[in-house]
Image 1 (cartoon, rainbow, N blue to C red):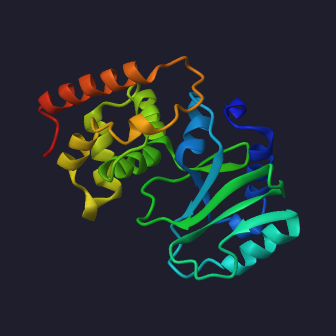
Image 2 (cartoon, rainbow, N blue to C red; image 1 turned 90 degrees about the vertical axis):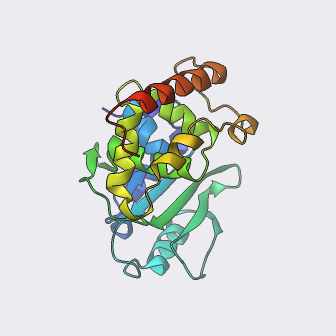
Amino acid sequence: MLYWDTVNTRLRDTLIRSMHADEFKDFRLVGGTSLSLQLGHRMSVDIDLFTDSPYGSIDFKAIEKYFLKNYPYILGDINTDPGLGKSYIIGEDKYNSVKVDVFYAMDPFFQPMVIENDIRMATVEEIIAMKMDIVQRKGRKKDFWDIHELLESYSVEQMVALHGARFEYTHEPETIMANFTDFEAADKDEDPQCLRGKEWTFIKQDIIEAIERGRQSPSFTR
């Protein structure tokens, strides 16, 4: 079951349409929107599509041709070098549009995708690993919001271990643990639209306590 109430109709329709397009057959939905659809904890407003296909194998010109054919409004990195990927804003007009990121994954996915209602998604554990990678580089408020929801099912040690499984060569567990409680930048972000009635002050406190427990756990690998 997907929690479609976590996205607006425009995002839902754009996502469904993209999932049925050949241009995106090698992509899966990742990030906060994928997590929100699977857990139902907060609203999400954009689409992140990642592939672990070999670098250079994705035809970004075909993707842009698809967007131009199907959407009257499109902004973004049209006809530029894709690098690791590109960002677009597509829709009917400026006020009825959605941001879509189309990127190569930096590392291969380590679990098969989840397919629900024809929507290809990264697993929750894949998303945890990616959230930990963001925390390793300093998390945003919405990332901590997601992590707090995940703490109901995963310990801090498990989350850090998942990062190691996915990002073996850049895994820095102590940096992740230190950044887990660095809320300076996140404090300046707007609160996401929470569907659980949570408050930022209590989210931070719960995460701090979870980190303290994690550091005391004999299973935590430094």
